[in-house]
Amino acid sequence: MSHLTILPTVLRDAEGLAASLVALGHTPIYGGVLKGFATECQPVLLQVVLPGGERLGWQRHRDGSLALVGDLQRLSRSQSLQRLLGAITRRYAAELALSQAASAFPGAQVSLAS
Image (tube, rainbow, N blue to C red; front, side):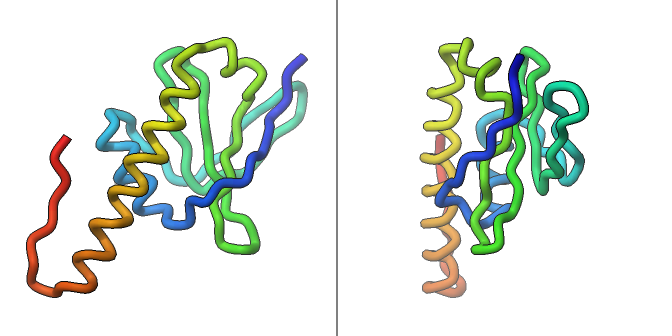
């Protein structure tokens, strides 16, 4: 029996997270609900469908952060989950840095190459 888990993160910008997901080859879906065991479900602000059909989502907490939501017990069987979460976090940090640089230097062209 597995359940949805909600993990706090340092992510705050949903648009930056969506851009990071796209850059990593995923198609972000805004809104919706992630379903867990039986009638368990969690509303999410953003979600992705992983290659095996599993879903990861993020919901906004009161403090403005985005918490990760997913069936981590099922997803943890995949060796690639830790790599994926690390890649998302690194790409998000790069997207955030670029956004801040663009704000600090209006008119400058800032981009990220893979």
